[in-house]
Amino acid sequence: MRRRIALSIMTGVMALGLVAAPASAKSGATIVDTAVAVNKANGEFTYLIQAVVKAGLVETLDGRRQFTVFAPTDAAFEDLFEALKVDGIADIPASTLKAVLLYHVSPGERFSGDVLSASRVRTMSKSFLFPSIEGGKPYISGANNTARIVMPDVNASNGVIHVIDAVLLP
Image (cartoon, rainbow, N blue to C red):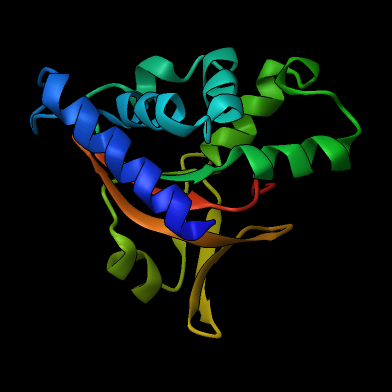
C-alpha cells in the first residue's frame, strides 16, 4: 500500500507541477494544490479535502506561509468515522473539524529529518505532537493516539506534507 501511495503522490505532484503556476515565493504546487492532485490521481485525500473546505482552511493552507501538514488518508478518516459512529465529514461540526485539522498542521517547513530529530512539534492548535521511530518506522503521536508516517516529505511550494495512517485527536 505504501508503494501505491508513494507512486500516486509522486505522479500527482509531477503532473501538477507541469501545469501549476507559481503560488508563493517558491514556485509550484501549494499544499492544497498537491492534495487535490493526489486525490485526482488516486482518491486518497477525498475526506481531507472535504474537511479542509468545511473547516474554512483552504485559504490558510493555500497561502504564502510555510507549513508542515500531517495528512491523514481516506482510510484514516474512515476509521475515525467508525469510531465516532458518523457517516462522514458532513456529520462532524465545522468547529470540531477545524480544531482537529489545526492539530495536524505545524508552522514552518519541516522535512522528515527535522520532524524525527525533534522531541516535539508545535501545532497550529498550540498543542504538541511527538515524533518517534519504532521498529525502524516513523510515527507521530498526539494526545490521544498515534499515526505512522507512511509517506514523508511530499514537497509543496508553501511547505511539506507527511502522509499519515490515522487522524490524530487533540
